[in-house]
Image (cartoon, rainbow, N blue to C red):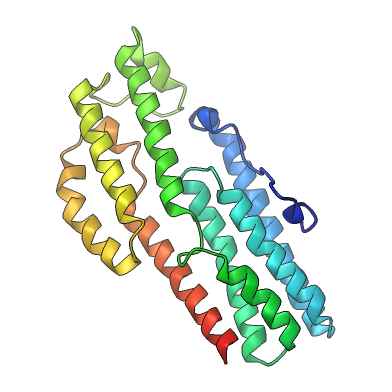
Length: 239
């Protein structure tokens, strides 16, 4: 995993146009990714305990790159899983710096990697863009199909009321998720207010459309955690 994160591009994900039809492989992917990250963080801690600070830094920076690779081009759930990974490595590096365990060269290396990250750690706007695209495509298939119930059954969940959605309902869905996507480009505190103001529009959507919308509040809370962790690490590096 550490070697793979040094590649210019590394795709750890699934075929995203099929992910709604493949819930079990998705869960397996996330569980394996989480375990890889946890082992990698522990490996860094073990190396630091042995006095091998460079190996520890290499491991934790690899973990940061891994989180970026996993989230890149994925939906919101990929970003959420990647965010949990990212936080572990940011906290590990922060702790090592505050304990004085890194030299100046290593601090500069950490700074270069962390400074290149978005303020909220990941491309959350991009994750929302994938949500917009995959959700709208699926709703359009339901709308134009002669047997929308059969399409829905492939998701492995009961067929809800309101199938197929109308063109107006799909348009209302699109307007909401695009507004939520735009909010995710703002600082978390401002985004929280924007999402609160948008809530009536989400509640006005049908059950089918709402099923394709990840919790905006949960995503924004995750963004806030990453924003704070990154800021705290950058502050530690500046001392």
